[in-house]
Length: 78
Image 1 (tube, one colour):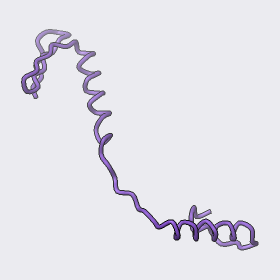
Image 2 (cartoon, helix red, strand yellow; image 1 turned 90 degrees about the horizontal axis):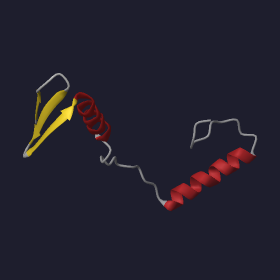
Image 3 (cartoon, helix red, strand yellow; image 1 turned 120 degrees about the horizontal axis):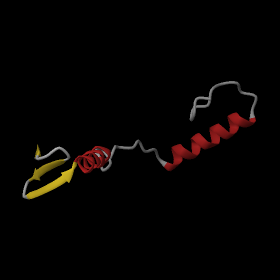
């Protein structure tokens, strides 16, 4: 990639076989679009639990909510 200032308000950008001549504001907009797209498509691993473990957590949270137990919630910490 290469960007060359060709006049006060215009820049020429070469990316592989593509050549663009853009105003300075268009170059800034292009940079913003590229910057905002970074990490958008990245997939992060998600911790999974079994249905049985999930149902046990819900039952415990319900039991704790209905009791006078003053301990913190295992699910949310409140």
